[in-house]
Amino acid sequence: MRSHDESFKPERIGKRRFNDEETFSKRGHRRHLATVEDTPDEGARWSTWDQSTPTERGPLPHPEWLVTELAATDTELGVLKTGKEADVFLIERGVPDTDRRCLLAAKRYRASEHRMFHRDAGYLEGRRVKESRTNRAMTSRTAFGKEVIAGQWAASEFTALSRLYTMGVPVPYPVQILGTEVLLEFIGTDGQAAPRLAQFRQETADLPDLWRQLCSALSMMARGGWAHGDLSAYNLLVQDGRLVVIDLPQIVDVVANPQGRQFLVRDANNVAAWFSSHGVPEADGEALAADLCHEAGLR
Image 1 (cartoon, helix red, strand yellow):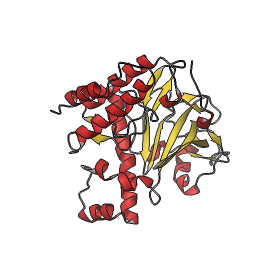
Image 2 (image 1 turned 90 degrees about the horizontal axis):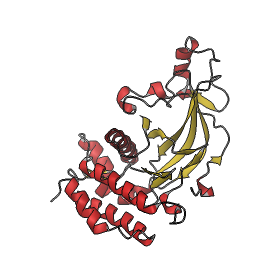
Image 3 (image 1 turned 90 degrees about the vertical axis):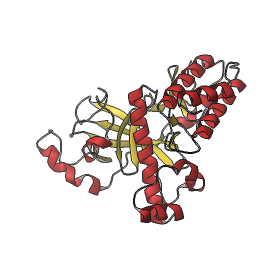
Image 4 (image 1 turned 30 degrees about the horizontal axis):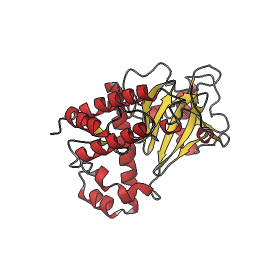
């Protein structure tokens, strides 16, 4: 039985009008590709699919459910989540006058008011860029530096999700990235986001099975050299008994980052403590941390 928290229903804000500058260059494409009007309906924008390069799109083959037609439009349906570093919106991408449509989660990173800047130094180790001027701007947190960092958070999450998805780790399919916006597979049903692990109790979920799923996912990540970096019961979704790992902007390369082992250990202890406190006796943080460090090749 699944439990839904009302707070995770999209906040209906009406269909949002997108900036015309984002759509003018796409009208020519559609004049001869679709029998739709030259501009999208009120509150929609042309699909941004062709604004991303092939390397800015998700792994091949693209899932069958994903709408990639140039005639498609994106309509914003509401707010799924507001967070410290980004807001997540529900987007419907569909081809007008057809049944070709899908739901996406649009994660938009903020820059000037980014609240993670006070604690991002450890995560950003190993992510320096070539230009010394840019590195100085990032270090001093100038307006330009914050924009660069916001872009790094988005790019880091998209790249990591692409690799993890290819490895078979249960993460949302990364659809595309545009600047500081990452479009992801929507994990949920009928526009309602799947509940977070933190919402479940023994009587509402098979927690021992979810623990086993999580250990398997973390082992695959560690084998690939990754630590989530900020893992808790709040960034794990459960849909129809399947655990899905989300919120990965701070993902850590445990080899390149000198604090890699500490991130693995912290992730393991955080989730083990939650499962243990919810009646899963086999949830052992020390044992999980040792396994993850072994998988990552850390001695």
